[in-house]
Amino acid sequence: MTIDTLGSLLAWLAENAYWFFIAGLIAIFCVRDARKRRAFVRVLLIFGGILVGCIFLAAAYGKMKPLPGFGWSWPSIRTSISLFAMQVESYQVLSPGAVNAVAHWLPFSELFLGLWLVSGIGRRFASLAASLALCGFMIAITSAYLRGLKIDCGCGIGPPVEAGPSALLRDGLRFLLPTILVTIGAFWVRRSPREASDEVPAPTQAVS
View 1: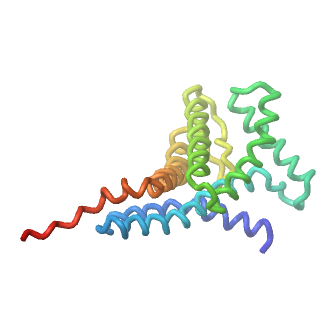
View 2: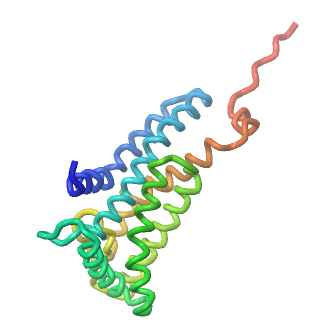
View 3: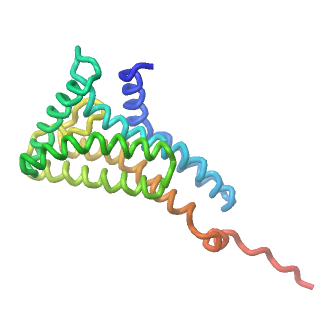
């Protein structure tokens, strides 16, 4: 499998992962037994963490992908990052030095965060960091829209979308919602056994 094929697969998973979470939520509410529900959520979190990780891997790929006709190399990646820096600058929030730093730091941070989520190690903290990152991105889009800027949101996933209500709706439903669900689920299943046992009614004592 080539890098471009893998990138296309990651982008497809990132754009359609929310269907898995919608189906998972419906299935969770269909499980009545508290213990079985807890075990079912643990299984869903494994796949959910991988899918949310794919969102960040796809975002990193979209920002570092070489221009058409160029192969994967460090110079071609630097060129793509330089173009991404123009998108960061279009938000008109950061200084030139900060724009350059963010443009070079963000794609690799998304790559690291995606791999962290896929690994399943420290899922609570990885998903929390992912949720905060996406909330920050949504705030940036909202700020650009309120200031009347007609710019590409620059997420790197799927076709370009102008920063505004459509970008907020798309990113909120497809990216932020699944990430928040994984975060909530990861903290919920890690509650103490005493808290978990409170969900299960105590057996009725026999009356002599």
